[in-house]
Length: 207
Image (tube, rainbow, N blue to C red; front, side):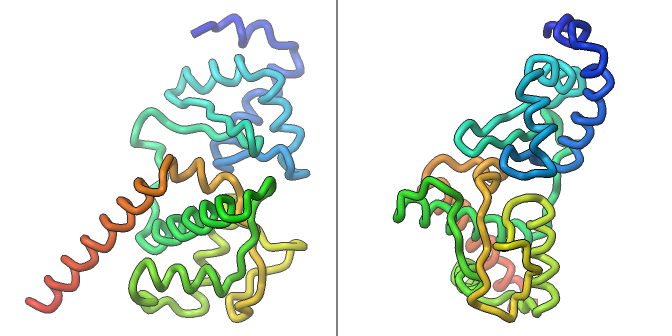
């Protein structure tokens, strides 16, 4: 750990460093292509060694997706790791699966676009049921993932799950939040869920 990376920062950058690091930790991701994130993204890019040192002091690692130009901080400890509800975890799996399918099939250079109808259908296929999600639950779930930066609507529109043709842009951050390297690993995640779900059904029927 090189503490001189911190002390050698210009005075203004030393003042900005705590704010930028706090924003990264609170926001999960910083994107180069988002107007609100751009300045802080480039701050970390310029002073990467100092940011890495500051994060390392508190048990975090700085990750960067060179292709999508996204920064993320990940904790070495379990205290600060996000814990997701089952439906949130399943929807992240859905987004990751759709992302991989679209980019592999179309060889896209940009983030892929899917419809809300496709997301709901894939969710149904993965869970083998709708999990009794209503319209408000779907909207709350997708808005939560939008806040996390995993997806966005085109043209800044609000999320309306009643409109199956409404389009969502899947962000490259979905690959960072679920670090699966191969399709086989993704299938293993799905098998794990289905096995747990089958056990749950058996227990309920026995009870």
